Amino acid sequence: MTDKIVVLVTCGSAKEARKIARTLVEKRLAACGNVLEVPVRSIYRWKSLIESAKEYLLILKTSVSRFEALETTVKSLHSYRVPEIIALPIAAGSPEYLAWIVESLGPPRRRGQRA
Image (cartoon, rainbow, N blue to C red; front, side, top):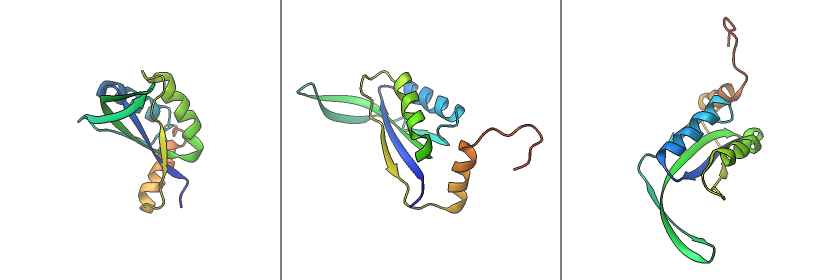
């Protein structure tokens, strides 16, 4: 088991999903955000009624230690009162990809600083 997670967030528009993803990557709270530009149909219960909506899925890669700040940032940018923010563990992954996540979440390098 790793300390890396995949976070799923559904959004009301692709534009909203892109904005959230960009902000999270800029703040180093996510290494990567994938926006599924094709809508998904969500069927759910809200205030005792069965609802249906077109939504856009945002898939984020991050670490457990960044989750709380990621969640706070998503909530501050999201248009929903109760956005879906679900974290799933990454049980295993290629060592190179997991190292890239760590590097992407780390502090920015200064000019001339070596890896």
